[in-house]
Length: 68
Image (cartoon, rainbow, N blue to C red):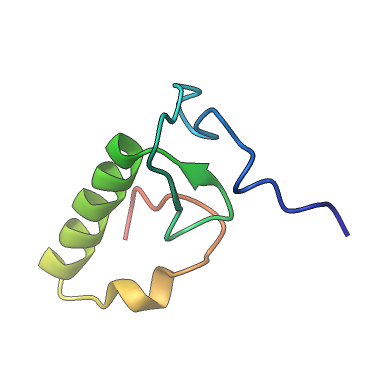
């Protein structure tokens, strides 16, 4: 099993920008992401809700949904 790098990681897995103080785990994948990328995920969750679907069904799906 690979070592957990969440606390030692310095760059966002998605956009590769430096993460100075704040980072989070992606809602959809196992990536460690910056707050800008997390905000993008929030927008995706809002679009899923707007389609009348529950974003909880996409949690941990392994990809960033673009079509629902």
